[in-house]
Length: 171
Image (tube, rainbow, N blue to C red):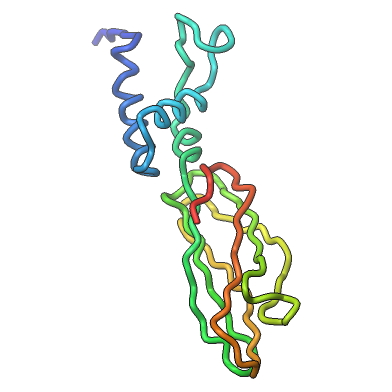
């Protein structure tokens, strides 16, 4: 039982190809250049700083590379406000694929034609929403206040900012 050792590009290629497939599964809209950047930018640099002829860009870090391309999205919601009391407007915030690490994102409401000044909905400030590893959706439920004012349909906005461990937000 002797063992043979191999090294070099021919040994790395299947690992990098597999990682590229995982990245595209998490975010199928990426270009070849974006996939390559996700792999290179998240590699653990070995040897001399930056690219070198012995280690290339370093050792791939699959979890970091995949997590770096995840996207967040917000569902549209329609509610009937009613004439009194509070109606919840339940928004679903989704990740494009499960993350292997915790992802956080700040979430807030902003006036549209519905305003907090008219008491159309309650603004609770900025919240941090947390996705634990494996989660792909969380809820955000700002309350809409009912009133007897005759008015057209009104809107307010939900804004996501400061995502951690993921790609930009898609709304």
